[in-house]
Amino acid sequence: MAAKIGILGAGFIGRVHALNLRKDSRVELAGIADVVPEAAARLAGEVGARPFQSLAQLLDAGVRAIYVTTPNATHVEPVVMALGAGVHVFSEKPMATNLAGAGQIRDAARKSKALCQIGFNRRFANVYKFAKRLIADGTVVPKVAHMKMNRGELKQPPWTSDTAVTGGFLYETPVHLFDMMRHLMGEVAEVTGWAVRSVYNEPDGFALLVRFRSGVIATFATVAHTTWLFPFERVEIYGEHQAVVTEEMERAFFSSGIRAEVQAIDCAQMPFEEKWGYVEEDRLFIDAVLGERGPAVTAEDGYRATQLVEAVYRCVREGNPVTLPLKDPAPR
Ligand SMILES: NC(=O)c1ccc[n+]([C@@H]2O[C@H](COP(=O)([O-])OP(=O)(O)OC[C@H]3O[C@@H](n4cnc5c(N)ncnc54)[C@H](O)[C@@H]3O)[C@@H](O)[C@H]2O)c1
Image 1 (cartoon, helix red, strand yellow):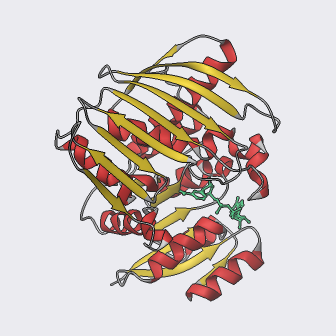
Image 2 (tube, helix red, strand yellow; image 1 turned 180 degrees about the vertical axis):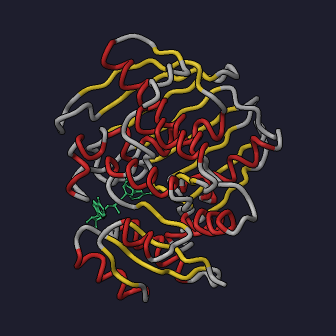
Image 3 (cartoon, helix red, strand yellow; image 1 turned 45 degrees about the horizontal axis):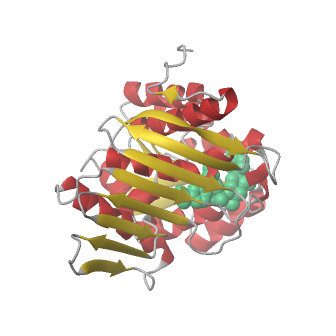
């Protein structure tokens, strides 16, 4: 029997997941809930599900798992409630907008018999899988990295410039690359750097230095007001006369030596939802719901990405380097 899945939040990314899930024969899309009834009705109509207005209604409909695809500051409450009810959760990034909220989800996931997967889709994008494979099999041993993650604007959706909703710009797009740096190079030992407030009413440009426990050192630059001119997302990892370079989700390159031929992958023609990793993260989540594997990105991963964001904000606020891990928040 197909697994009944519900979606809370019928906006841009809720629709991306709903369209993926509709193609998975193991899934019955049982309900789409949104505080805006027309939004729920529109997406529910498109994917053949029932429209609802709240998480409680989705749970009453007997769903086995939910997707939480509402704006950033509204993730913790429904995720904790669903996990408490024994319902599996896929939560969009960021897991929370502060360490206390991330801790609540991590605790709820530890206690629940249900599982929690966080929406760090880039782990499943081909360009990053290419880089991860080269590092995981020992072909490249990273020594130094340069990372860049820009955002063209904080205008779309309109709430992206409201820090009460986002938790701050770093929780918007850069948190993806904070997770990616851990995924590729392991735990961070220390961050330092500076931020400026130029266009928006919050720090919107960051120049950071990162030191990993492994000894790898990296630069990380992120700006919120760049337009969408390519390249806005780029990772360069250097080994011993080796380089791995990603360009957006479009292309990746591996130079294995000073005079070696460069290997390349070009994903430009792939459908967006595959190229950006959404199709695979949804398939893996349904595998997990069906008991075939654990969550592909855990609540612990979400917590550690939150820790990195908080460490950077503390560093630029106080003007001092910050070492990780941060102290866990007091339990509630
Ligand atoms: N992984 C990714 O690549 C990616 C991409 C885009 C967005 N996101 C994340 O997904 C989340 C949603 O982003 P979006 O771009 O789809 O936003 P959006 O504004 O397009 O959609 C959000 C929807 O949630 C609804 N909503 C708001 N509060 C609600 C509540 N309390 N209960 C039920 N519904 C509620 C809104 O009415 C809206 O329909 C954000 O956290 C964002 O950071 C992730």
